[in-house]
Length: 132
Image: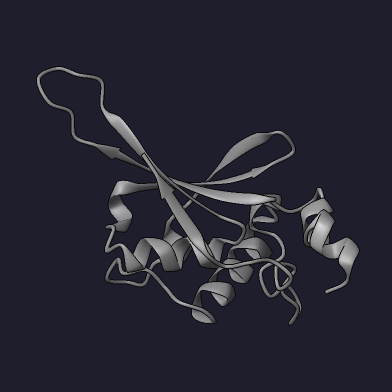
């Protein structure tokens, strides 16, 4: 990666047709009528976010996923990210599942995952981070 790419970041971050980050929100139980807290997880890639959630042993049924781009966050369906038993999918099955959902829906928030054999996110880091 050249000096300019190190400064500016991955080229795909400037592609406005795909999300520039992904977020997971998990509502934590409240105590004594307090407002519930949200646990947030972020990653530059959806596969990185899913790997992080799987590593944290978070149940997919308790997670809300979002693609963040065009100045907004767009809800994502968790169904393409889990198997028939509700367990998180891993790459490359996750990528194929996302490619299939994009082909069926043409929703931009699912675009770029192994589309036609090329991953639009291959220049990004796949690490996730959680915040409370």
